[in-house]
Image 1 (tube, helix red, strand yellow):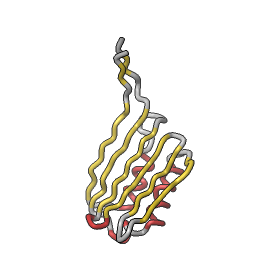
Image 2 (cartoon, helix red, strand yellow):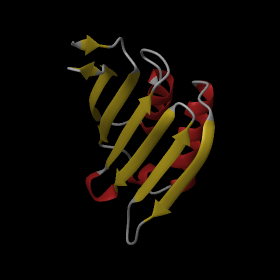
Image 3 (cartoon, one colour):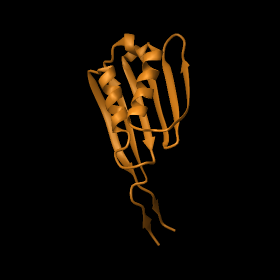
Length: 122
């Protein structure tokens, strides 16, 4: 018996290029932008963990009741990775993503947004 679910989640994966290095290195700014966006999109924040690398780079992961969001900076390339998965509804997370992009003002973006479908051959 084959089974194909309806959408069980939504994933956004993006790399923002040409981001101002001052913004990339401002860890408080980055964390606040992500948290603000999550609140605007009505996510339930459970916990966040972040780490500043030496000599450069920053990573932030936010655990959500709906799943998670993560960012990682590459100051040497002027780039930031943004990844979000939500098991809520189709297109959930677009407000957070849009807020992040608006605040970081990248020159270029590579983004993939997709619905997650479960398939089974049981």
